[in-house]
View 1 (cartoon, rainbow, N blue to C red):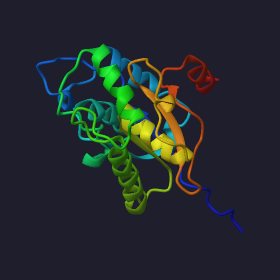
View 2: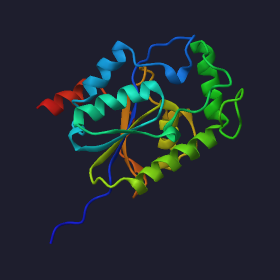
View 3: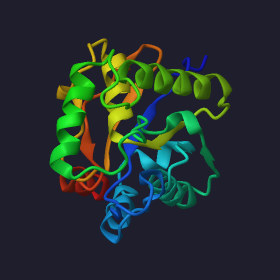
View 4: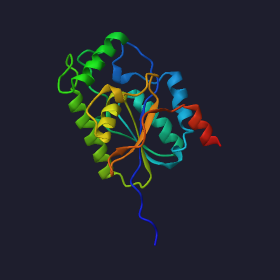
Length: 207
């Protein structure tokens, strides 16, 4: 008798470095050449060969990253609006120091709207519901990859780990291009954020 299949494995990936242009709406920013390079390096991660479905948000930078992975695996890319970053359209582009202060407040006061931003509690509920909907609809039996954004990835990580919303679980400050694995049944993270282009993991994959 064959063994029962294990829990479905997921990989949450944040898009890597982007071309910042204050004159262009943030959801339309593409990956920079450096971002594309780092996403391509990530295609050598040992779990890539297990991916049988690829999803992304509908923001340009996430689509750029998701398409690289999907093309590499010969799979379609499915975009889902609810996988998008927390809505920050009320302020638009902000200089990095000001953005970081608002991001700190966003995580510290999850039930409040910081200068009109989507509340962290609402963004968390949205990203969790989106992942659960994919889980119900997806028929592939392999690993599901989601290419999305840092803040919602952190909010999902908090929910998976059963932790209060906090920026302490945020991805490294390396311009994006990080990942973690998780399962929904049981609900758990399988480690914390790791860079896609982490040389140790890539050397192990080549060994």
